[in-house]
Image (cartoon, rainbow, N blue to C red; front, side):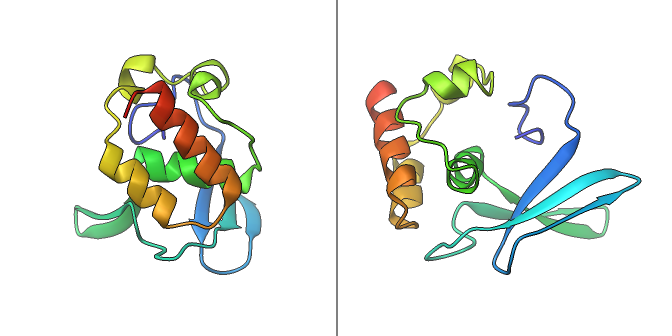
Length: 126
């Protein structure tokens, strides 16, 4: 979310999703948490980015939010927690694409994530 400009303050921990078991460690650069997220297609909503002879994978903002709901067991059914808890600018949320959200919903079997996406789509009138 920092990469996409959706986080308004400093970040002291980096959370990544992975296909293997969850793991956490601290380095001089900060804390890194890797959390297992089951997906039908793990790379759905993920882009491969190449910069200065380096490559990495970056989740779309909605993929990251769906993973967040899954990892932290959030019971969110509207955009309100995104605005109030995560302090995401409401105008950024208005850029949501129906197709991307439906794709995220089809990519998981988690009821919490389905309810989250349904609530977001309702609130954003998608």
